[in-house]
Amino acid sequence: MTNRPPHWVVAIAVVPAIVLGAPLFALLWRLPWSDLGGALRSEAAKSALGLSLITSLSATVLCVLFGLPLAWLLSTGTGVMTRVIRALCLLPIVLPPVVGGVALLLAFGRRGVVGQWLADFGIQLSFSTAGVILAQFFVSLPFFVLSVEAALRQMDIEFAEVAQVHGASPTRVFTAVTVPSIAPAIAAGSVLAWARALGEFGATVTFAGSLQGRTQTLPLAVFNLLESDPADAVVLSAVLVVLAVAVLVVLRDRWFGVLRSEVQR
Amino acid sequence: MCFAGCGGSSGSVVDVLAASSYTDVADELETLLEDDLGINVRFSFGSSGAFLEQLNQGAPAAAVITADDKTMRRLESAKLVDASIAINRNDLIIVTSDSDVGRAINSLVDLAASDDAVTVVCADSAPCGAATDQLLKQAGLTLSPASREPNVRATLTKVILGEADAAIVYGTDARVHPDLRSVEIVDTVDVIGRAAAVKGKTHGSDIVESLRSAAAMQILADAGFSAP
Image (tube, rainbow over all chains, first blue to last red; front, side, top):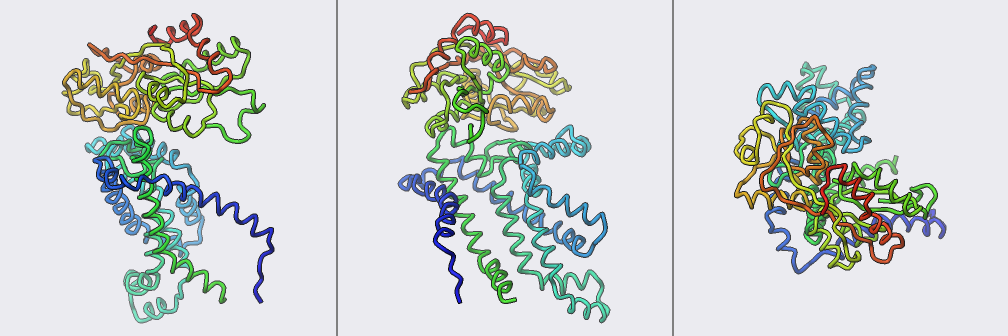
C-alpha cells in the first residue's frame, strides 16, 4: 500500500522547493549565453578558476592525509578527550566562516600565537596561497572526518579481527583491511570536503585576503566582479553551480544506496 | 540590508547607504538628521561599488553617499538617484605600522621600492582602489600588494591587526587610528564624496539637503574631510 501524502502536504512542500529552486533558475536565466566564452576567458576568471582548483584539491589531499588517522582515533575512543576532539572537529561546520577567518588570523596570522613563531622562520601564511589552503582545510576537514568516522563505526569488524588473529599489525590491518572496506566513505567524504573547500569565502577573504592569481579564488572573484561587472559574476557563479551539481551526481548513488539499505532494514 | 522584523517600529526607520569611509561620522550625522528632520535614520555601510547592484535589487534606502564621483555617476546614469551634490573631499595617504619595516616608509616611492613591506590596497572595484590605481599611474610607480581588500576599512584593518606593514587609505581613516603612522603623499589624488536621494523615496531629498548644511559640514570637517 502506498501512503500518498494529502494535498495540503504537497501544497506546503512546494514552497521550499521554489525557495531552493528559484535562485538557481534565476542564475541560469540571467546567464549571458552569447558572451559566456568572453567572461570565462578574462584574466581574472582564468586565474580564479585555476587557483580554486589547485587550492581546493590540495585542501582535500590534506583532509585525507590528516583526516583518516583522526577519524580512526575518534572511532575507537570513548573517553573525554575523544569527545573534546570530536566537538572541535564539528566546530568549523557551525561556526560562521568569517569567524573562522578571524580565529585563523589570531592563531596563524603574523602576530598570532603560532604565526609569530612561523614568522621567525620567514613564513607568512596570511595573504599567501598556502593561507587559502589552510582556510579551506579548516572548513572542510569536518566533512571528511565525520563521513569516514561514521563508516568506521558501522564497519563489520570481523575481517579486521581475523587479520589480527593471524598476526597482522594494527597498521597493516588498517591499510589492508579497513581502508579498502570503507573506500566508498573515503571517496564520498573527499568529494564533500572538496566541494566545501571550493565554495569557501568568509575564512579565505578574512585570513588570506584577495589578490588575483594568489589568493582570489572563484567565490572571491564573484564577489569582486559583482561590483564591477555583474554579468561576468553571474557566469562565474554558474561555473560553481555546475561543479556543485556534478558533485551531487557523483554522490547520488552512494547517498541513494544508503537510503535504500536503510529502508530495507 | 534590512530583513523582516528589523528596526523595531517598522516603517519609521529611514535607511541611508554610505561608503565605509563614513563609518566614524555616522553616529553624529544620524543624530543631526534625526534632529533636523524628525525621523529615525539608520546608516548602513559597504563598498560604493556594491550600491548599484543593491539599489537595482530594491535596497530600501532613501539616500546614498558614495566615496567618489565615478560611482555616483554610475548611479545617476542608471536613473537610480536624483542629481547628486558634492559633500566633501578626501585624499589618499599611506598608513604604516610602527614596525621597523613600517617606519622605513616615508613616501610613495619608498612604498613602491620596499621589498619587505607587506602592503594592502583596496580592490579596483572600490573607489579607494580606483583612486589608488590612478595615483600610481600618475606617479609612474608600480606596487605589488599582498591583497586587494573589498573596501577601505577592511584595508585599514589589515594594518591595525599587524598582518600588513602598510596600506593606502583615505586621510580620514588614518585619523581614526592615531597609533598608526600616516605618511602624506605628494601630489595625491583627491576623491570627492557625493550624496544623492534615491528616486521615488520620501525623505531622500531632505536628507541630502541636510547633509550640506553648515552643521553637517562641521561634523565632516571635524573628522578630517575637507570641503568639496
